[in-house]
Structure formats: structure tokens, C-alpha cells
Image (cartoon, rainbow, N blue to C red):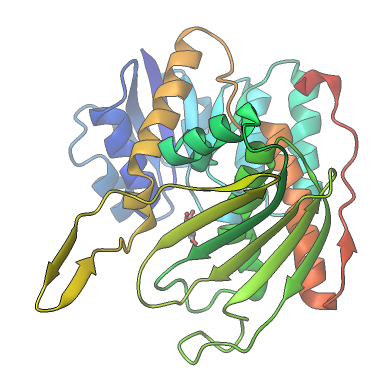
Length: 335
Ligand code: ISE
């Protein structure tokens, strides 16, 4: 049984605590920490025996904690992951792994120096049944090679104070990871297209905006981010290949007609859209840790690749031009 300590008890942290306690076999929550004690108390309300630690270091160093889950605010991810590597404990960190490429590189260097893959990044879309089916389809090459991907990532609302860069590091980072995994390719160029903004979006950001990425094989991935779209939470992905197209399936929802109208519900909360993916992701992490290995899921190199790509997208957001993505060669440690 892997004894897990949770750092950061906001909405997603509490959700992961509940998930690990109720749904994941071979793993349980034994300790939590949050700068706000109220959050920590809430997280363990239904987890008898779990304790609240006074600091993050106390939790990471505790002899009762075998592995750590990090769900605190983005700027704390890098130092906390580095501390886990320093004490040699496996760590699951919500995205982004670090908020700068330099920070992500420090994590990669520390992990290589410690000689063991300890880091998994919370890119849960790789565990979504729809994305997995789409990947299997693309890998079969039944429609030839992929040429273009049209994607959309829409949130009804978001943090009203966020800067434009967070649209990339908090939202588009999912497409940056999942599209590179799906297409088995990496990105070499980035551009940001900016239409007029919605009256419902905060003034300091562009919303919607369109990220255009080019892969090393020349595939164009175009993603609309519309994070104050009001009407619901939706993730779309359509791949155009040489002899046909393929679409990411949408969550099941009945279609009902009445009074000369057809209705279909759309989700509003990303935590529910990917609820099954989170369960599969954590079960894979638990199973791997119980066997003393890495799950093979998103690792520190994936976190680093995403950080480098995101930083270049932010550069393109500022310059309005096409920017080259400076990705160094993958160290053999990650092969
Ligand atoms: C949030 O942090 C997520 O991870 C969601 O998947 C994303 O849709 C949302 O925009 C982010 O704020």
C-alpha cells in the first residue's frame, strides 16, 4: 500500500484526495498540507487517520509518506518537485510541472542526477478513453498520414484576473502535451492568431485566441482557446489525414426532441469531463509504484517539452510573429 501525502488542497487537490481514498486500489492518503488550514481540514474530512502537516517539507520528509501528489498553485510546483527528488520519493505533479523552461530543466537535471525516474506530470488527457481510441486509430495509419489537426478548448469561465500567458500555461498546455503524444511528434514552430475579443472576457487577455503549432514532420495543429465562452466546457479535436478525417468522441449525452426542438446537454466543469481519465491515470500511477517502477505516463521530459513549447507560444503571443521552438535533444535517460 502506497502512503500518499497531498500538497495543495484546493478543488482539484480535494478531488484527488477523495479519488485516491475511495477509488484507487493499492494507495491511500495519509497526510495533507495547505497554506490554508481550512482546505487541509476539508480534504481529509472523510479520510480517517490522515494527518495535517505544518509545512510542505514536513510532509515530504515524513517517514509515513511514500509518494507525493502536488496540486498547489503553479509557481510552487518546481521547488516542491525538486524537494521530492532530493529525498528520493516518487511525485505526481499537476500541470504545469514548472512555470518556466529553466525551472523544468532544473527538474530534469535533478532527476537524471538522482538516477531514477520519480516524476509523473498530470497530463490526464492521455488517459481519456476518447483520446486513446483516436491514437489507436491514427497509429493504425488506416487513413494514411495526419496532415492537420483542428482543435478547440472552451471553458465557460475562468480566473478573471489571469494574464494572457496563463491561457497558455494553464489551458493550452493540455493540447501542447496531448497533441504531441497523439501525433507522436514534437513542435518546432508557434504562432498566435488573435481575433476580436468577446465582451464577456476580461480586458487583460485575448479571448478567444488561436494557437498554431507546426510539428517536426510539418503537421499543422491549430487550437482555439475560448476560456470565457459562457455556454459550457468543450474539448474538440479533428484530425485531417491523407484519405479521411477522424474526430475525438464527445461525452455521452442523450439527445431529446420536443416542441419542435432538439436538445443535448453540454458539460460545464472540466473535472467531470475528465473524471474517468483521472481515475485511470491515478490507478496506473498506483500500480506502477507498487511494482517499484515508473508508470510510463507523462514524465519530467514531457513536462520540460511542454514548458519549452509554452514559453515559445507566449513569446509568439507577445511578438505576433512565428517563433521557433528551441527544443534540445532528448537525453538517453528518457528513452
Ligand atoms: C484547468 O486547470 C484544467 O486543467 C482544465 O483542463 C482546463 O480546461 C482549464 O482551462 C484549466 O484552468
